Image (cartoon, rainbow, N blue to C red; front, side):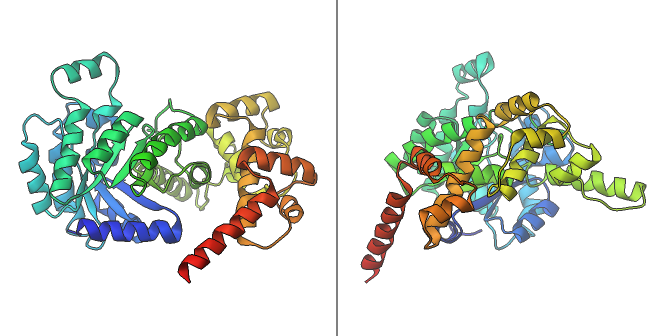
Length: 407
């Protein structure tokens, strides 16, 4: 078990140095071992993770197949805690379990060696008539708030899944160390969610949640969980456009990589050769992709070639689809038009360049693909609130103030 203050010290150092943290919901000792080796800052023993390893959807943890807390306890005690010593392991607590005394069970969790808890499965994900019925008989989100509060009292580290500002406010008051905006189950892969919000809608939701965090307790660590964000490119967008300080993933770290690796390895042996079909361009060449991969291809291309002229029509020709189809598909998946996405990406890259390098505004414009400086300046002000020159001045003053403070 790693003490709460030590976990907070480590996570804040990661945020200060790397800009973000990573949490992984794992379902097996093997997954835990390699996510820890990869640099995950904390692991979570969730019943959903065990169901994923069994080839089922994460939603299985909400059904009456087995006791969620017993699954998480067995997973943690037998597969995670004996193997993982230097990375905190958190317990996925179903607080609504009618057969436990919360306080006594939290003490058992702590005595077992878990460093903290996370409220999952969370009632927050259940709406409609079934959600109302659960609330009427006392199985409400309030029980999860109570669990976080009691865990905080026992000096356990706590991660709180929330879906709106009200839950955020209650969990902050309960003492949660991390507020995680739960954006729904992870898209992608064979078992992934087929219905999910766009990445831009995810940005709007997290903005409102993180704004409430900053109003109540600015030092609380702010993260998001999955939903439409299942790739590093998606998270780059979220980091650039929200106050997000970390990503917590489940399927993104175990199910999707396993699906791809196992499938491709078997195919490689079957065909007497090895190949990697994960790259969007390779999928395009081989014709082995689904409709969602068109959007990933476009986003990957923007990431690698934003400094050049990019026409969606050209990408549509290469992908062998119509311009209108690709444009519509992109807007549906991402939540904004291709043009807006490209402009946002370029302006964010320009901000990064101007923050780190002493170059002229015009040179920065050229380096992110703008030959018309007036247009660049107009877009920069629209998305940054400042002209490029004012941004540089503001950045210089910020650095000077930090230097004066150190002196």
